[in-house]
Image 1: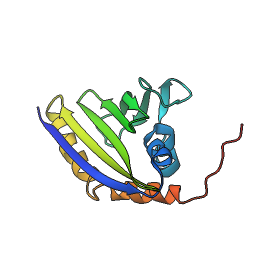
Image 2: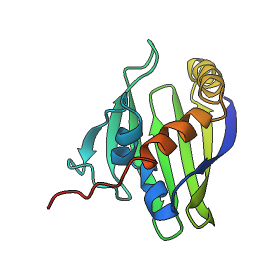
Image 3: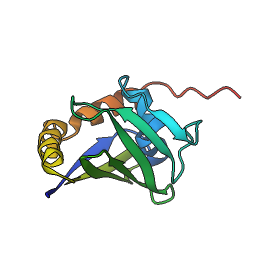
Length: 155
């Protein structure tokens, strides 16, 4: 079985304390309108190590993706998700750091592992599609959201 790793660096136009949460499931909903996870644990979707959720598959072979937040260190601005189906397992590691007063560098690394030939084929196709713009589409979407005035959540 094959292992494929690919990374990209994106620059976010805000301080890390505001940029890093954009990589949480709840944060991603703010900049990706198609993102709609089903939270299994905790059911309220609180961003915590060990959280479990599902998202619909983006192909006709797999029904859904199972996600676990396998590592979260908010002080070090680092999160690692493990995602799996019956055909493959992959990790998504996000590491942010402050580069200027209101700028954040985010390094996103995907590592895909096939569990069978179907998984290997899906991984090759998905990583090429995902990185066709080197995640600059993520950068643009997140920065568009971050440029909007901050609204405090009501109590």
